[in-house]
Length: 556
Image 1 (cartoon, rainbow, N blue to C red):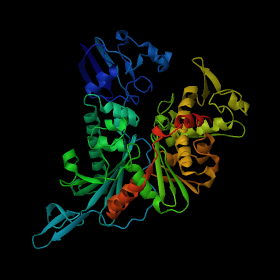
Image 2 (cartoon, rainbow, N blue to C red; image 1 turned 135 degrees about the vertical axis):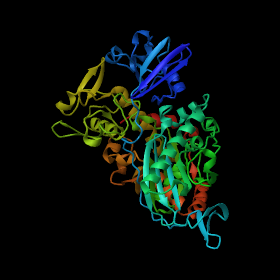
Image 3 (cartoon, helix red, strand yellow; image 1 turned 60 degrees about the vertical axis):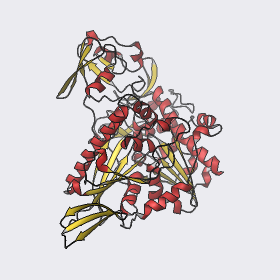
């Protein structure tokens, strides 16, 4: 047996475990969350910890790509690749909780007549209030509580969570709260999360983490609005299909294997109390309809928020994030698909990548004289690169030919001052942004994979519809990540074709906006059930020659 003591800020936990298991496995056993987006596969380099008694550690040689010589000298290792033996003392950096992370909580404005599911009826003779939903009596409260009538919309993103509290009588938004999705510490993308859910206790762990953070967010919004959480009667879960499965503690394994059929299809209500949610004792959960294993309720909410069914002409809706979902609307006809963009656009799998927190480079520009101009979140000293900054940097380097069309980093830039920033680090070329922050060749490849996946999805939708990019009338970019993007950078890296220039509009968090419509107007549920039933889903995994299309979209 081995004994590991974990130290994080003012917290200290000791656990006994089997000799030879990884530090990451020991941490999970101890209830210590260490960020591991690749689910312990040794590829993301994010699970760095410091061994305080490093003479006891046998470091796996495979860590060479994730740990610098300077870090190794300080006793820093990758937790997923370092086995435990004897007695170890491990220092773990404090993890972000979302309070200092930039998460867009607002979305596209949508006029919604207030006529929700929950109906409170006061009986003055009995002096009590009955709570009804679709002619079903949910419960009874003493006294007249008709004015205390609230609902919550929860946007369950793969990386971030947003909760918004509404007055069900007036439709007014009262408060919002945001947090990082704690499940991302185990696995960053959907496929990795499906895999982790299949491990012993994996599903239960992720479900419990979600319910715990949700209850915190309910408390935060109720506190801000100065209401009682026991007067929250309905909660809308808007998220991709996998996130809904995990939120409802349902095994998502069917999403990862042919024929990719979800257990949850949405359009249904559940009792919140049965899932440990701290709200009214008879509060309801509603899941909007889902279209397929990889086109979920968040896109249903997006279709509703953008009113795609009602628009004339050709509209492309793209939700850019960890997953790249998109819908092509042609005079009310809808075709949807989804691509695995991966976590690069969230700052993951990037050498100096970080979430959108203070110090993250979010904007980047190269001036005419070759001077670089950067803006960081909070105007703090540059600490790393978040998704929007990454796309700006790559876009500018492509524009100034520091990055070739194939993605190769070279020093033959159009401006000498820019070319001089291409240096060697550990024998490999990097673009030096500041003394501590740089862009590597591997980072560029990650961007190519992410943008190539989304561009290939767009091209597949256009080909399926017999359309050309020039024929698109408008392009809607959705998602909390997409809201921060520079349209020119998206075109510069080839994520969007040049024909989309001047047609791009950012809608913000449409998952939340659509969820708001589901909450405040019960008729939208019947309406969207019919819309979803008519959506054609293009499954790229079974599309002829999609692999060739994807490869053709990798170049800048």
